[in-house]
Image 1: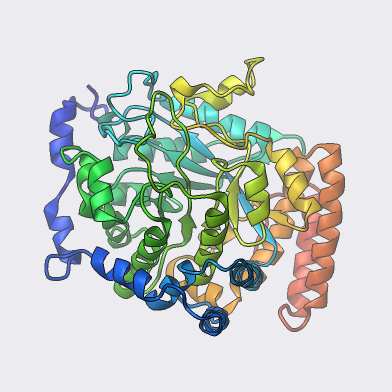
Image 2: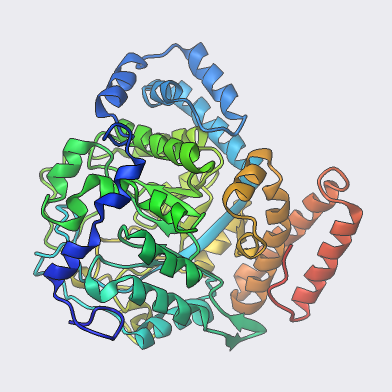
Length: 510
């Protein structure tokens, strides 16, 4: 078996043995313990349940300071059951999203590169013992073909590239796949089809391997803990697998920071344990990152359990209702207010639509089968989902064009901006700008420029018409903010760049 570098072979068993390095866990522990104290979290949830309305309203007011929320306040929010109070939390979440991120929504696509995995997670269609799955790892040429569809046929500028935990998709494979994706520069209509931001969703790695991803130009590194509840974690992740090590996974983002990757992302798979506990776990994760590195997660993701091929879910006792899911997303907007908040196409169009005022990112034109983007343009049955090649079943498979049109109709501008990463507005710098609201100024300008670029290069006539109306509204808003937020010189520079985009120039940004 290839070791991912093309220079030798290694057995799966030997590769697994070499992955976890205890000396890259121990330095982050305190008195031998990790930062998730189950008993303390459960006690806090219990003691803060049923908080009076005035206390909840005081917590809401404090959230406008755009600071990570105290544990007791988070516990009080997750304990709210009164529909009226929950609605007040949701309305505050909308205003805080507007304050930090304005009306922008960032879109991306996931690109699954392999279905081979050494783990046996109880809930996952790609678990190693599932014979219903057709196993496959994409070659570099196949990855490039998939990425070309996303960049040049659909118009995505940002991907989340997803890998199983397996020696055939090791750090060297991931780094090379990123370089292949970044190399794409295709002429399309009036502009260029290219991917400007490659985020990575992959297994925990050593610091040495993470440095390889940093050198290859990784955007955000995502590792989702799945569940922060120790006992539940043990029940769904067999101990003798790599993923069975709770602390190796918990400190994956800490190691990434030490490897030089200053954009990291947290997430939990809602439905494995009590959703209230998971929200508290996500905030605890953000707090430990802030404590050690001075900045928290760049994004927070909130996937829910979804059906998967030949996977039994009869054991699940903590499924999250639509009402609770709708509310917990709002709580996270208040609790980690500076972070981007991602809801994916696991959810139905109706659920995503109901959350658009408080989230910042969503995927579009999504396929999660291995090699399925290329197939979509050659297979007359391309709208069909195929369980045997997917990790889970999607709830929304609409096109990027259709989703952008819907968002514009409801007052949301889709931003394809990746300028902050290339201008050095990452890590501590971007967190400071987000907390102060200043990042929104840069992003509002760049959203207009990149959205106009996409409209010119990829939009259908109907979507372009609606998008152009959205652009005019945004430009009027920008003009009205001179000189409070933008100087006249900046506005003039912006309008000149906008005209250049319409005339055919591309990738202009502030």
